[in-house]
Image (cartoon, rainbow, N blue to C red):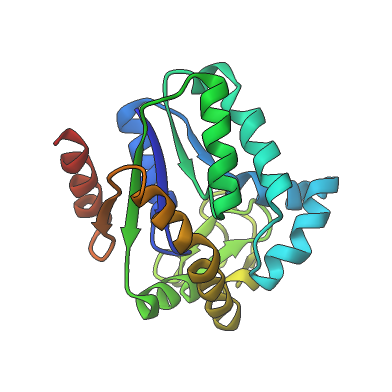
Length: 214
């Protein structure tokens, strides 16, 4: 199963991608995770991307396309994958089509997880990250805790710059301007599956799986 997963920042596509990856036994390829790892490790790519990500803007196409090409060429992606966070522009979508041709990929599904913008802002602004291990939690998950449940670092929780409301609003505008046209691009080529992202995680996932089976 090859899936391109869409959704605005904070809609829950990363969570759903991880669950689908486990159920379908295919790798979850998250450009966001790759970029954040590069930022944490302060690689050349990470330093370039950090300034852009902190503004809530998109990382340039040439960087993203190179990352995806390298990842899809790995053996574990040959039987299927879940692309999370790519493509985000029409240029990336066209480049991905060409890459699929090179790799002989013809069958894939496009899933769009939809949610109200104010709900998305609330979700993202309600997250905190550990500055030691990088894991993200909701305020409810860490209520009353003074150390990270993942790595035990003390007093390590913080609000990431790209989870602040003003940055979230900018990310939403960037999403509308740059990524929504990508959905229109795929709508002209195939049937895009739209899933309501409001609700508990299990219900949303059940909806995705049942729709894929159809």
